[in-house]
Image 1 (cartoon, rainbow, N blue to C red):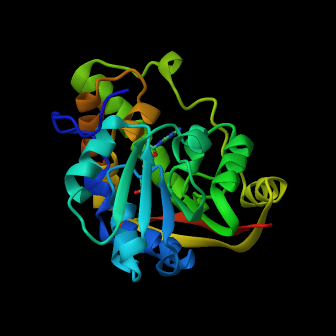
Image 2: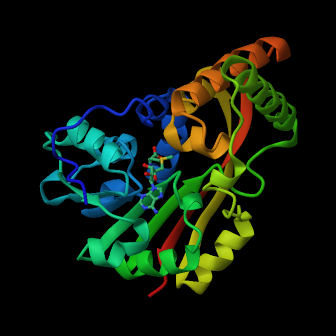
Length: 281
Ligand SMILES: C[S@@+](CC[C@H](N)C(=O)[O-])C[C@H]1O[C@@H](n2cnc3c(N)ncnc32)[C@H](O)[C@@H]1O
């Protein structure tokens, strides 16, 4: 397993730029606040990426001396960026854990007060097994707070025309500028099914959680949101499997600019599902 603290080149296709956009910080701050994080001493930031949510957690801590944050991700390059950004912070002990979220019971060896899991649960196919692992790592009464904008219902009907135009234009640009087509056989995301809010609630109950808050929040995503997400490895690979990252990014960003201009819009609404649940016993 690569050591996230070893010397490394920077990742040009990281999540860092997107994660510091004000609209995105607002959506996630809402979830972090919902978890009551300032009351907790042991916290897991699951799928922490380059550390944007870890920072939001740090900003809210009060009883800092005894606080431990486990920041878990399977991307070595994302974790290295998080270590660079947050390794020196003194507000809490941050333990960076390079692991699959599906292996949580093996990779974090104590029970915690809260698991905060932002914008990542949709990556995992076997959510039932994952939720059981999370439950096992929580103390009785502990909190799980997660959000996602990849669920059945995350795209309001009025946003569909934008995505249709953007995708068609991007594919055309990829062909005309680079002579390339996505390779559908190389897609890692085809098997992922997006769940409804009710299905998430059902899974949580089956795994031994009591749902305390379930909410859908509409966030207007500005052009720079789509611009920066078009430079994120997972997004490019999801839309344009098999295409070299730089060429995919360029086609997405060039077409985005044209479509925003053509539609005369300043943002596109997208819905974030946020759930706060408590371990039932
Ligand atoms: C979209 S980013 C979200 C980062 C951060 N939580 C946020 O909300 O800003 C998703 C992160 O989940 C991580 N991830 C996805 N599937 C994972 C898995 N099975 N195990 C561990 N990390 C995973 C990715 O590497 C990526 O860093």
